[in-house]
Image 1 (tube, one colour):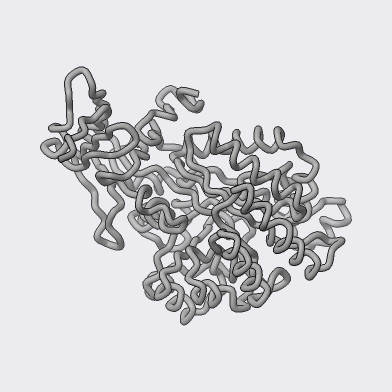
Image 2 (tube, rainbow, N blue to C red):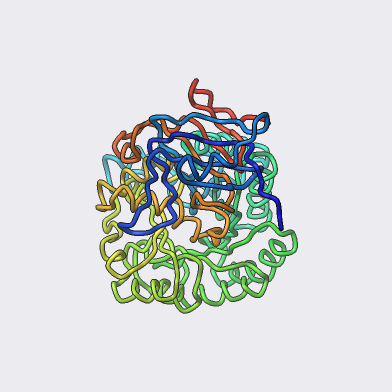
Length: 423
């Protein structure tokens, strides 16, 4: 019989401890909650009586969380973290006009291709340094696991460069980085789409797989991007190379991408602004997670925001993500949750679940991440507020006091020190 692992860390007396292991209205909040961790894993969660037996004099550090909230670390399951430059001029111009000819006359470059140009020009070191800054601010706001896509290269060397930066970020920070190949984010202006698909499937994917640079392969299936038939071809080829499929779909049109997600039982389908109700049910029945990005809808003043209530009615499990990218520059899951609640009628509990356990499911990480329960990684945050509702109430702020990753303190905001600890 294996000996009981004594705790080297105990969090005590939390006003509220959110396990996030339940769903819907049955949202577990443990008042006067305690948590014990041994090494990287949680060994006990509950009240004092359940956790104190794991205390050992001289071994266990006890952190008093009286009057505070303990919650799982946020999992940001859809980001374009690594990119060159910005599109601030485009963003500011579009605040006052929707006429793209005005931007063209002013010489303002727009869209994905503008970001591709800037990313191609940036060195690997420049991409790493800019992404590292964003990642540090994300961690300071409670994020402990981040999915990072390529997609601003649209050429073999730059796509591989972005994925290489993902690997360096994983190796040089305490956060978990999940790497996704999104070579099918578009195609170069000077290349036929058919030729680019050939490049994707015959050159890029074999390189990505051979160098073990990604877990997932994503594609943008939408009007003006890739058709459902093209997406199926590309994603099935990705599967042949050991890359699991994800899909950007129904963001600006419905052309069958979400049906493909259900048919292929993809881990997630992301955006879903134009998804018909019947297809939402298909996604739910297939176990596909719907990844929603309120900050993107806000940033682009989307003509058709996603319909969370319809998703809820059809039983679709959802996740929230920042979609941080040059067109939607937000590093805060707290801001995303506030938008989800105010604009889409999510409850604070629903938003919390979508940012933690739902997001873990969108990355197939829910066996180890996303909830606070014995056996899972000790990824959690302590909030300097008396109840979790403050996470969506304090608009534009940061309620995080400390962040722990695999049982170790990595962020301490108590003195407004945003640096990673122990590096």
